[in-house]
Picture (cartoon, rainbow, N blue to C red):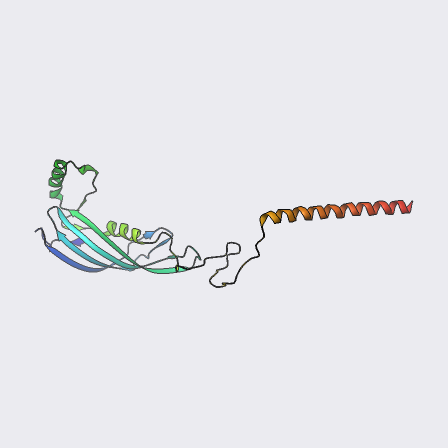
Length: 201
């Protein structure tokens, strides 16, 4: 929670804050990449008093951990998330709705976040900003070669790694040729047995 009492309610008043807060649980993209719970998140905030409430503009910096989607190796990356949110005074809500109605806006469809006793909770805003700032497909580096699709070897560890490619069409023909050869062997075996029987007679 952040306190706005020192800022006051005079429109145009400004206050700048620098805080280091512990990361809440599940701050990131589930099972992909995120900021570990309890790690430091550095905040730079600008609080501005306006008619309806307090406009908060800020930047969050932290280190996220995850797994490279190509080679599955652990990775760590710096995250910078910017955000802005209006926290409305509870007694200003009726006035803002009245002005929006006069302007023809649909005030009911707006998401209004209220100050509570002069305090505001930044966690929901921070969570949304961090998720947007994180990569959906994190990689350990841009040119990561990933894993061999046939055997799973990490290609960056063995750049010359390869498998002899066999055209599937030729593989099918090779299988047919092997079947024919096996059949010919069986026939030859049968013919030889017939000759032996005739010689015995």
